[in-house]
Length: 138
Image 1 (cartoon, rainbow, N blue to C red):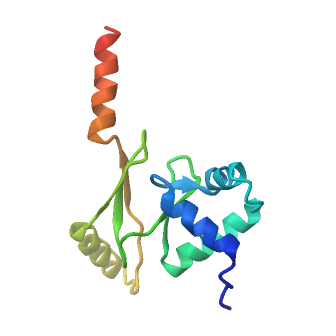
Image 2 (image 1 turned 90 degrees about the vertical axis):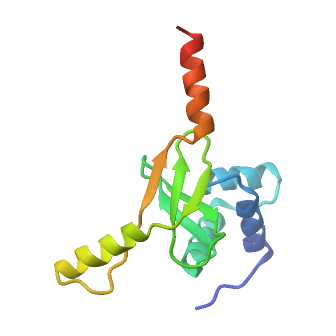
């Protein structure tokens, strides 16, 4: 069943597009609440879930297990490098991962295999800030 494109859903879409990286539904809801939109948390969750299902948003699980969302900028299947500190996200092609996933699935008799690969680390700027902070306290 197709979802109606209400003003609330459109505002959630706009807020996600304006977000600086992956955000949780709670964080997005707080932004919308601060703007006095009157949009409820359940509406935010539904809109984000629908956007992810339609391919309009990327969705991933943080290392802590929380679902995070980001407006999708690349069509089709892709992977991400994500900074654990600032949330900077870079979309990457990972042909080695794609080849490995197909070979591994086929080797075990699986077809139509799907996978999710996201790499979490520190971006160059956050690593440099961390290193600089460590040197200043020494």
